[in-house]
Image 1 (cartoon, rainbow, N blue to C red):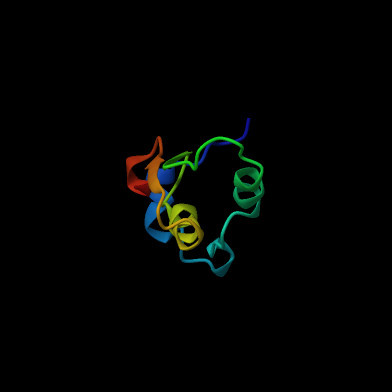
Image 2: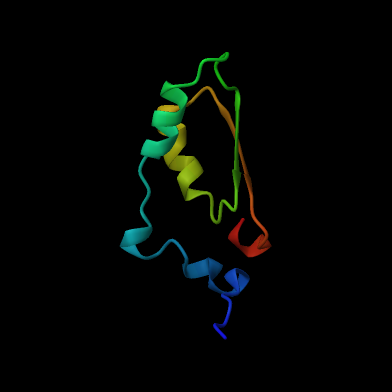
Length: 76
């Protein structure tokens, strides 16, 4: 059986690796481009980890409130 990662333990080093650098989520851009309702005012990222994706998305969507939720407090 595979050992599960304890993200509370790895959190301090999680974003250190260069491959962890985030850019604006292209799938989010595509999804919102096809959105037919009123402009979204809130984005919820479930399993956000350290929130680096939220930070990257903020550049493209500065007027949207963004909230991150993660099971591991150390990641927040």
